[in-house]
Structure formats: C-alpha cells, structure tokens
Amino acid sequence: MSVSTIPTPGMPGGPCRGSCNHTKCHTLRAMSEERCVHCGVRFGFGSKITGEPAMHLRCAQTIAARSGAPATHPINNPAAAHPVGDYRGDKR
Ligand SMILES: [Zn+2]
Ligand SMILES: [Zn+2]
Image (cartoon, rainbow, N blue to C red; front, side):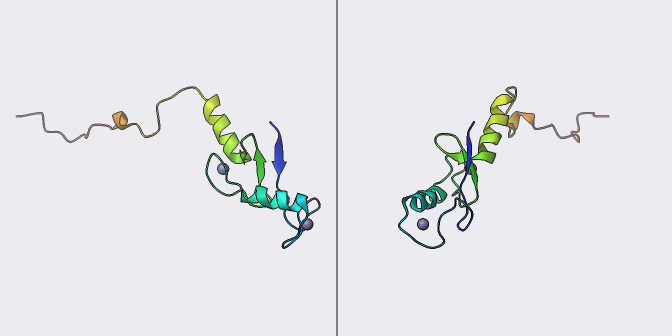
C-alpha cells in the first residue's frame, strides 16, 4: 500500500501559499480538495492518503481492519434485543 501525504503550503515540497501558476502547486491544491471515497470528507493539506481511488489512510485502515476480521453479525442487530425480565407469568 503506497501512502502519500499532501504537503502543507510552506512546507518543503508543498505548494506556494496563496495562488500561483505552478503546475505542481495546482495539482497539490487540487489533491487537497479531493474527497475521500470512503467518508466523503475533503482531504485537506497535511493528510495521509492512499489507494486508488484515493482515500484517507485512516479510512483505508478502517476498511482493512473490517475486511480482515471474521464475518460477524452487524452491530445493529435487532435480533439481539433481550427480553424484559419483569413478565408476570407465575400466577399464584
Ligand atoms: Zn507555486
Ligand atoms: Zn476518509
């Protein structure tokens, strides 16, 4: 898995602050405006991204953790509701 970080403006390798006409800076700014395919949040500068299509590294790790786990029931399982304990079935 290749991970890349979107450099923050002013950092070494980062785009110029403000607007400019450098192709590289334009590309980096466009990258920071991209949205994660997993969570839909803008990457922003300084984010670690990975994959194709690109997503946050943390989102990729979330997916990897989920897919690597054994198949289990969904967390919101309505069948897991416990019966209430105060039923009155014992007539005297
Ligand atoms: Zn520039
Ligand atoms: Zn994400």
